[in-house]
Length: 305
Image (cartoon, rainbow, N blue to C red; front, side, top):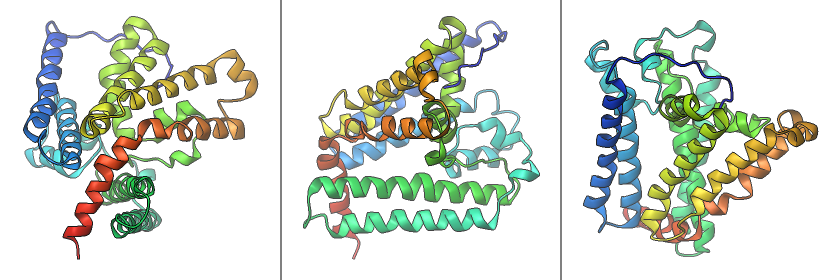
C-alpha cells in the first residue's frame, strides 16, 4: 500500500459507529452463505463465499451514495462492474485520455480466449494427467478468463459509453517494485477498497508501515476463507503468502533495499517477480488444487459436451 502521509479528516458524530455496524452486518453475509453451502461440493462453497464477500464489500462501498445516484446506475455497479470505486463509477466524468480504444478491446479478447483455452484444456485432461497440473492450469485459466479477460472487457465497454470504470488489472507484469505491483497494478478493485476501509483509518492511528502490514494480514485471512476453508486444508498458507509480500515491501523500502535498487528498474522488476511467484504454492496449495479446482473442472467436463 502507499506509504504517503495520510491526512486526518473529520467525521460526523456516530459515523464511525455506523460504519462499524455496517462492516459487522455485511461480514455476516459470507458466514451465512458458508453455512448454507457447507455440505455442497467444495467448488460450490468457494464460488459462494467469494461471491458473498465480493457483494458485501460492494454494498459497503456505496455508503453515502445511495441517495445521490440513480437506481439503475447503482444496479449496474453492483451487478455489471467488478470495481470497488463506487464514487468514480457513479459520479465521475471520464477523462478523454482514458477513453476506450480498439486496441484495448482486442487485447482483452485475446486474454479472454487464452484463459478459456487453458480452462478447456484443464477440463479435457482432468482424468488423464496429474491433478496438480490440471489444478494449476485450471487456476490460471480462471484468472485469465475473469481478471484479465472479462474484467478488461467490462472496463472497455463502460468507458466506451463514457463511464469512469478503469481496468482492474493494470499490466501487473510491468511493475518495477512490489509496492507498485500490489498498490497500483494488481486487482485495483481490492486495492481501492483496502485503502478506503483499512489502510487510511489504520494509518491515522499506527502509521503507514503497520497499516500496510495489517492490510496484507487481512488479505491473507480473506483468501483463507475462499481457498483453505472450501479445501478443508492448507490452513495458514495464504496468510503466510501475503505476510511475505508485506515483508518484501518493507525490505524494498529499507536502506538495504534502496542500496540494492529493489524499488525501481530491472532489479525492482526481478524482486517483484521472485517475491510474488516463488511462494505461490503457499497461496494456491495442494489441497485447494486437488479438492476444489480439479472437481470443478471434472464437473465442467461432465456437463459440457
